[in-house]
Length: 167
Image (cartoon, rainbow, N blue to C red):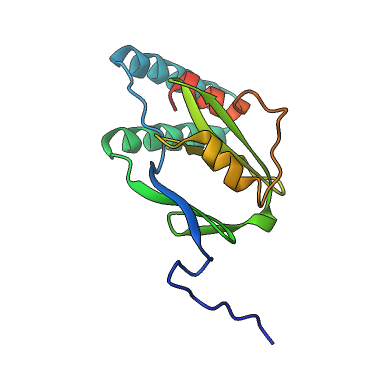
């Protein structure tokens, strides 16, 4: 018989311990020289893909430029992030603790104040801005459910490239 979960007044995933609003994606402030440089690189890559008869690569470059353009003129929505008894909730997406390998916090204000979840399988880390939350309190609560990876002292390469290239 399928397991039925009793919905409590706290929510369908048990008691909610912490919650705060986070941006859907990181908004970067870009200068006009950044756009000029990226346009030059984009055109050069499209020319290269045409010369090498790799039209799929050209399509990927055009789509990436289109996504950057859309994200520039569309403000990031705020979504609710929750740490609950049975897992974490990001907006409408629920991630059970069983799907999370471990977590780590990088707290080097004012540049980096993020909570990372390393999911099982071939999936990128989930990065959650801590905003004005106390990382010690968040860490203490998460240790009740997950292991902490103390060896991680830096953001993933993907996060670093995202910040460096302002993508």
